[in-house]
Every structure is written in structure tokens, then in C-alpha cells.
Length: 167
Image (cartoon, rainbow, N blue to C red; front, side, top):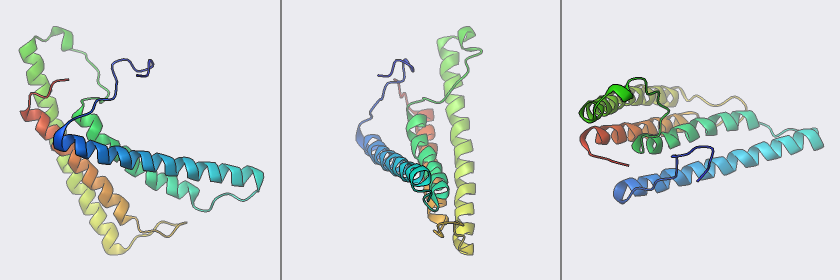
């Protein structure tokens, strides 16, 4: 465990949630390795050979978007979002449970709305055939991946509304 973030140890789920987490973890690892490699090659090329890697910035942008949303379901499932506790000290156990239920319900609703909009935007990108400027790769698959991962986070928040998911 990292001492910089006490209480933020890596938690593993079992069952279907564990499989989904393992897949998303693998996606995150692959993206991080790709981003590290791209950045390394770009920096070495730029400063040693005066020839930066073409499209490195664009590739990093696209990969970073997917990386952030690939981590969202795990963060949602394990309730590891950043939170400000202004009134928690004044709430009793029942009120805290109600508060958590409401927070998860609102999160699920907002993530559902976001998923619908992201999917619609991905459809538009696919319909128009939008490509990235430097690399000329289609943007729609990245947008679909982001929408799918937002939907998975929405399902995680929705399950938390109805479960006694304790950690």
C-alpha cells in the first residue's frame, strides 16, 4: 500500500465484478505502457535526433481519454471518488445509509445520462467518419469505448443503490 494515500489499498472483487475489473485493469495497464512508450520515443527522438514522433501528442490525448474512463467503473464500484464530508459528523448511521443511497442513485442517473450522450456523440463521429488530424485514425471507436465504460460505471453505481456493498 502506498503511504501517500492511506486507506486507498487496491481492493479486488469476486465473481462477474472481478472479471470486469480484471479486464479494465488490463486495459489500463496496456494504455499506460503505450503512453509511456510513446512519450519515451517522442522525447528521445525530439532531443537526441531532432525528430519528434509524429502524432505522439494526439495518440496520448486519445489514450488518456480511454484510460480515465477505463478507471471510472473501478473507482465507482469501490466508492473511491474524491469526497468532501461536510455533514457526515452530524448524521447518524441511518441517515448516512440514506445519504449514500441517494448519492449512488444520483450518480447512476448522471452516469446514465452521460452514457446516452456519449453514445450519441460516438454515433455522430462514426456517421461523419471523423478522423484524428495527425494520425488519421477514426475517433469513433475511442468514443464508443468511453461510452461503454461510462455505462459500466453507471451499472456499478446502480448496483450500489440496491446492495449492502460494504468495504
